[in-house]
Image (cartoon, rainbow, N blue to C red; front, side, top):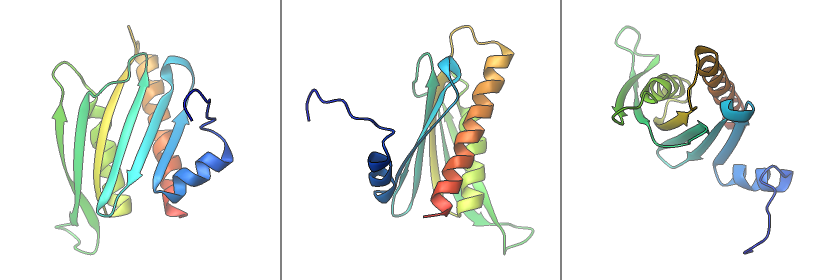
Length: 145
C-alpha cells in the first residue's frame, strides 16, 4: 500500500503483530522515548531497543541460559557483549539480556542504541526507567501468549 498511512497503534495491527511473534512497545515521551521491538524465533528472541534523538546500533548483548552452579534447578545466564567504539549502549543491553534469559529460559539477543544530544543525568535515568518499563510490558505480553 504505497503512499498509505498505517496506524501502527491500531488494535488490528497490534493483534497481527503479536500473532506473528513480533512485539512493539513504546515508553516515554520526547527525546526520552524508548522503543522496544522483539521478534520471537524458534530458538530465541531478538530484542531491539532504540530511542532518543539518534536511534542507532551502539551495543549488543547475547545471553544464553544455563543451570545455576549453586542450584541446578534454577536458570542463570551467560551474557557476552559487543560495544561499538564510542558508545555505552552495552550497559543498557547487558542487564536486559540477563533478565530476559533468566525469566524466559531462552537465548536472547539485545541490540541497543539510544542517544540524546547533550544528555544530563536526569535524561539518562529517564531512558533507563522507560527501558525497564518497556521490558516489563514485553514480559507481561509474552508470558500471556
